[in-house]
Length: 578
Image (cartoon, rainbow, N blue to C red):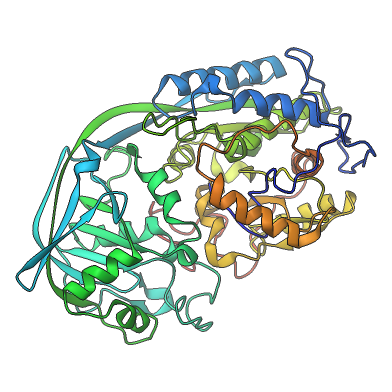
């Protein structure tokens, strides 16, 4: 899951004040501000209340991010413990099985794990000499086509700019060049990012063409054998350590029968320093060529070098489960509001010294805890919701959003009868804030719904100020949006009641460097839960209104998506899509 400075995904203990013991949010969306700031005492097992409270939220968060679940990695014993616990929570709340009478929805997956990864090297020959690039230090790659053996020998190398073919923006980095069977090296983000050209694509706001997933997909569609994305922390939105931690384990994908789109045999990332060495080896100034890629009229350039890469992978076919809990509507049970939150994380890494478990407290223990708190509130609500409410705890978000991708292809309710998706991912825990940051801002009528909920709490709504990082395209609501369902994706902003934006931005930087996608993302009993409970209550307030026979929210004029969906080709951007 992504991190955003305005959305403050990240904000953990460096600025967190000790939290209140009795803080509670009313279901109407207002908030109270208790004067005490004693640490929250999590509610004892079996004594949870119907209200959305800090103590209940803390109890659920502490449990889901405990070592008991071993980092919640799909396909492991940690998964089975996690999904069983979520199902038991749904049952105790009083929900019904949400998948045609079943609690679970099996998502088929193929996992490719590089064998002897530390010995893997990429070799580049140029000018009669050969250089080697080391796994983790210089490159990170996987067998994206899930073949047990990758053997690329003497492949031609092409620098393909940003690796974009976007007719709607009149841009094609692959024009007039054949990359079939070759290795393409591409830049992160969109054309125009490097030279700050606001006239290209959407200026600083990242489009789907800037996503790393798109670049690998497009290279495969063009017939490339391999694709390497040049990592730049600013362009990607996260440091190299996040890439390494996310890619070092097994790489999951949907099986070919679910996702028949072409895939490169090998794909991954290369550091900027390694790219400079590689280009220099071929007699090319990487930085100069990189600058030219931001200009209209850029032409992809073959390099006078050959690339070789050989490795073996262990291929495992299995499945991982989405967990679905349903509260049927009283008068319109065929219409549904969806709340989604992914449960998966990265498991454990036995090679690490000390603490080896990726507990994922913020990412996304907070989302699961919020999902359960909101489900509890709906189940006790009077009058009950007129429309059905589906609580989707999905898997494989950390693997390119595969769990939600599978769900929208096999929905429990027709997507045309799905009112909205409210996605909850990596909520900040940093105390109360003056604002809510809406990452999905500007797309649909749901902007006004969350604005009203925030106003009831005395808070403002602000758009995400890191649109260049493309956080909208990095969580599960994307798959609902691409199928035409309006979405809400929001969380506390950075403007802290105690410390303001300066303190929020410090916390953002600290979390990104030390905890995001690292074993350091653990539950902290000293957290101040007031702000996160405000967020949870705001999400409940929006969903409560949507479930009460309100008009279907619509996409705004000029939005990137449409209801009903205009194109049915999975994996392709919408006509005006990011």
